[in-house]
Length: 299
Ligand SMILES: [Zn+2]
Image (cartoon, rainbow, N blue to C red):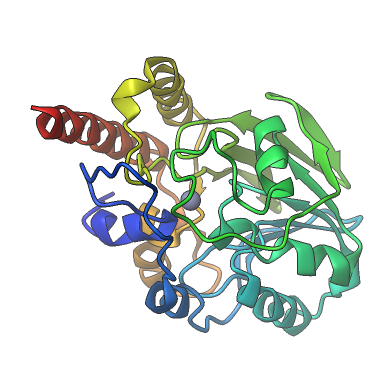
């Protein structure tokens, strides 16, 4: 798996100029161009078994039909909510059957649409301890390396906290929460199994691992946070991993894999048992590069 588009994807999770420093927080940029690109139209489609892609083109929203209600991973931007709802209906499913909304991390491009989707569906929202905390602040958590620089959004008030390692029985599907702090303090990766007939695959929705910071924040000033970040990277590398999905699909070559399918049922093109390791290795290199830039900027 190549990560050549990584620098573009970095913009996804809200970016800071590498090494940039400022005594005062800079005004948050509007990200208006990026928002349009992230929210570009995309037909919904089956990824594998009970797992569907229902997001816009630039931001993943993953739907799992548990047999007893739908589970939705991420709500994307505030303006993505209507598109996600339309995709669910287009698949012949009902928005009010979304019973659970799970979040990767509480930035506006993955959690901004959750309040509206929760309202439309009545779903329970689930996140890690720190993820729930940041969602309740509408994406304005001072502990977040991007605090003050990202978009904010309608806070999500009712969030059920999921423990690290907790296995949630959602209908007929067991979903495991893996705390993977780093991109945000509350970052969470989720795994489950999807089957077609007797063939069951390890599905991984791995959170963003980009070391992005608001101007003035230096990862090097937070060695414990960086150590936890490195553990998260190692943890994702070690996951059983058949089909990797990431909040920004481009961060894991998702569209390249989709394009290689010879038919809508061609799961083989999506499977890459080394994808989680490659995703983690690229993240480790990017974290090291960020720390080096911070050291250079301090000289
Ligand atoms: Zn982000």
